[in-house]
Image (cartoon, rainbow over all chains, first blue to last red):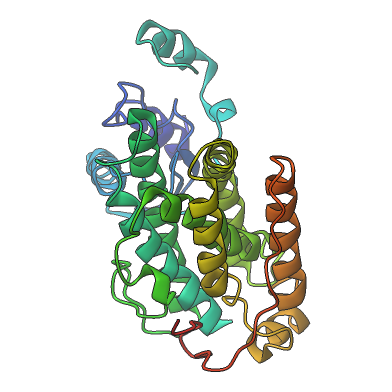
Length: 103
Length: 221
């Protein structure tokens, strides 16, 4: 498994603070690149006024820094592609329906 | 483009604050919730625009509350619900018309944000239009139309005179696709049609620019 694949996997443990679905399954992680201990991550949000922006970035950073070969995490917030419900991973939709959330 | 973007961000911050003040006193519970949601969107749009300004070398306040390039209309609370809906339609409307003109901007960070802002503004427009129809059908009609005309005096001037130098330069640079006259005409046509469908004949007047402050993109009233 490549380092990037392992980082994607690790982020399935980081939940959106408002919905118990991971940031990966919510479709918030746009890209992950890894080079020599440094992770460059592109992140989007469901809304520009998302009140949990700081929490989510802190949680992502903390989880990735727990990986043995990660020394630094650089997060860039991007708005293109525009997040829509279509970006929610299929495997998360059942859980969201259980929670009464339209997905 | 720097003043335009700074004013866009400052106006969105101010509009967010003005929307938020109605989040506990709108005439219906649904609209109170909508006011809160729209406020959150506006503050987010504002905050997301300041980094574009920083990229252009402007010393911007990323908290989104520091700038003073806002419409005079937004200096104080919106006095009644008619004024709220007039701002929802016309202030939000002119800012969104400008953002829509940035979707293919050569200023890439703005083009990227424009798509997201437009996605979120769709519900603002739906809210404003629904309330406009409702107000036009009730006893508030004349008071609402009066608020629209007052609001147009401010919002209609935001893009500046037809030959506004900053906007013209932005169009020439490919940063914005429509000039001031084209943006203003889109607004005028949309609102006139919206009200005409309710049997309300409104003419948004031509605007003069005596006393217009180009540096803050505002008219003193």
